[in-house]
Image (cartoon, rainbow, N blue to C red):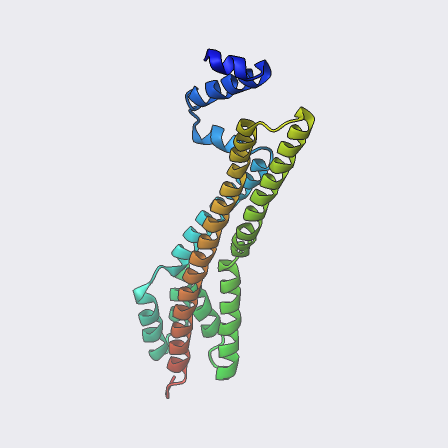
Amino acid sequence: MSLLQDALPVDTLNSIQQQAVQLAAPAENLNLIQLLMKGGWIMVPILVLFFLGLVIFIERYITIRNASKADGNLMAQVKSNVLSGKLEAAIAVTRSSNTALARMLQKGLTRVGRPIRDIEGAIENAGKLEVSRLEKNINILGIIAGIAPMLGFVGTIFGVIQIFRDVEMAGGIDIGSVSGGLYVKMIASASGLTIGILAYIGYHILNMMVDRLILKMETEAVEFIDLLDEPGV
């Protein structure tokens, strides 16, 4: 140590000792919330997007799942009543079932006696309305999937700018502070990318659920039109 003290200036020796102490110090234990908050102010809108996306996904998932619940007796009861000429009973069956398919069939049943084209149009319009209700706010997840990663990158860029400003003001480069600052600012990018990926996955999960329900509704609607088109109905 005495040789180093003779060979190096005092300022340089002190700097080396400080960095050695920093490296030897134990790592700071942080919980998840504290770690996220180290990402800076940009973490506030990123976390807002996360909670917004989570609420939308849960609400839409429950809504679509409830709408997809199969009522195995609905079509059988409607078909039986229509073939028996009990139109009012068939309408009553659809009113008692709070599903998208029941509301579509009800629109068609209330127009029985008109041309098939009119009945098809009524069912199609009712189906479009039901689909628009199911898809409500799903597109917001797609927007979150695009915005969250960009906000993360913005946070990192501002962090790098701040680091270089501090270096300029200090008049020198401290490897420890630069690497530590980058570590902190990369939290914003990692958080933004993670939330964007989750929102992207949630967006496509909900769309697949809606597509399956639409296919089911279209199949039942075609069966209902074929039923009305049978001779004697």
